[in-house]
Length: 281
Image: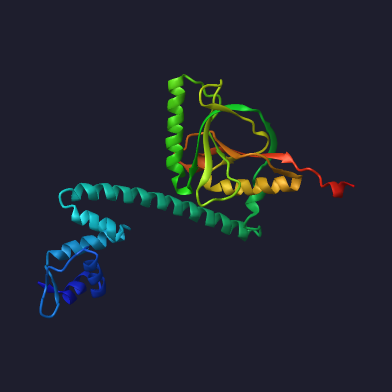
């Protein structure tokens, strides 16, 4: 048997942490002396402690580790699934970090050449266009930012199924309309839509009218820059927002390996501001 101090020294885990782990039921002492309260661990528990430390290094929470340790019958299968999930998330983080590093290097180069860090906005092209009314089949719901990817797959999956069942014909790429006037903690009032050739059960007419249009070649993380540039253009040219902003996805993100190859049309519906009467006299 090992005293809590010996066990602590071998595993490089403080005695305070070991007591906390015992308190939450993660790893309990093998024995506790009833006379003096001294705690003792078995040498076999060293392996358990090593596993706990290993899983912590993989960003497992203590609750996740506890669930795995307590499920002895399915432990290997449960651990396999959990590790696959962690690896997937780690790969996503690596790719995100690589993109951030690439952006940092580009910003360094811009500053080195004496340009403002936000000068890339000058390269964003905004044009005025008239978008004709269209017949859309849609699903509208409140969606949090963290849920958007799953909602995208679910809603468009349902819409494509409906198109197949009703023998409808698509006439343009899938699109998403954003009905919020401002950011909300309740999520974004989002309408997932597919333009349909003819009216059918569940369709409606969407009339965008006059819009500012920008084509984005790259990741969706750049959309905020597009909307910033469109808003600046609208103010400079005397336009105000008139209807839900919407995005048209010219390629399926699930079929594109590199986010740099995403192609998205971004529309900002507008109308000409009315001149102030007092100002015009």
